[in-house]
Image 1 (cartoon, one colour):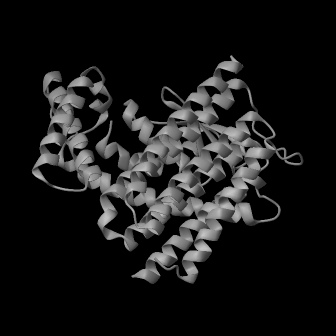
Image 2 (cartoon, chains in turn purple, blue, green; image 1 turned 30 degrees about the horizontal axis):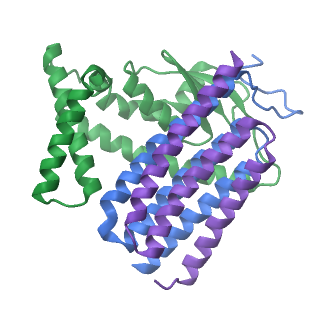
Length: 88
Length: 105
Length: 175
């Protein structure tokens, strides 16, 4: 499908969001900061996959987004548990 | 219809961008969680709504994804915040302010 | 609004049926079609899932499964989405202002909801509302990280400011 101007701007903003969260992921400064950045990035990626499904007009990517989101959540909880264990 | 969907998509992308900006600008990890979770959740929901207007035949699966984000994202953030508190990470305080509720009664 | 006393077995069955319908609905939504094959598979999957999660059905015991719960549920959804949008505008304002107006603190609030499901929904709602993030739930005390904590806040004022708007509606459909 051909993109309208608004859609192009929206895509650019989404790309900017990914870059900013990657920046936080790289900068840290502590491990929890990176976990938070990764969590946020996962949700942005989930919505990004849905946008990709729309761009390619293929509903297959919706399932990918669903599974990706669920797995990201499990991963975040696992890492949070690991952080918790270090403190006590 | 296309215009409405585009505007909603744009709002969603803007909130997502603001959330990521908050992630970079906020001074400590708790505030980063706040900015990241809230803005990105609404941004994702808004993007899903926009896509739903563009492709009405996908609504059921989009609704499931939206519900999943709505339930798991705050839960994941709370889990991280809880882990941080248990690991002993103290919330950041502004240096010049002496006004904090819980820690300074 | 008190529900009539029911035996343990009856509520157990009701929660099982609730989970069954929930799983079946989820299946149909994911399949995106109403073909007979999908319906039969969905019914079988929902049955297996319900039977397999029998030991954990008590999660749903917090739900009030009665027609009078629908009104509060819809009211809650309305409040929730309004708060979600408000919280984002609030957060956007803070992020964009150069001075970062923050007065963060961790406060305790009290909940009158007794079930774990009710507390879960409340905790999630708190996380998505203006400037507050649930940190931990310890019994009836919820620890909340508050971005803009008023200088002289105690547990009562924090409870009023953070939980009361949700709890009013939540109490209608969860315990």
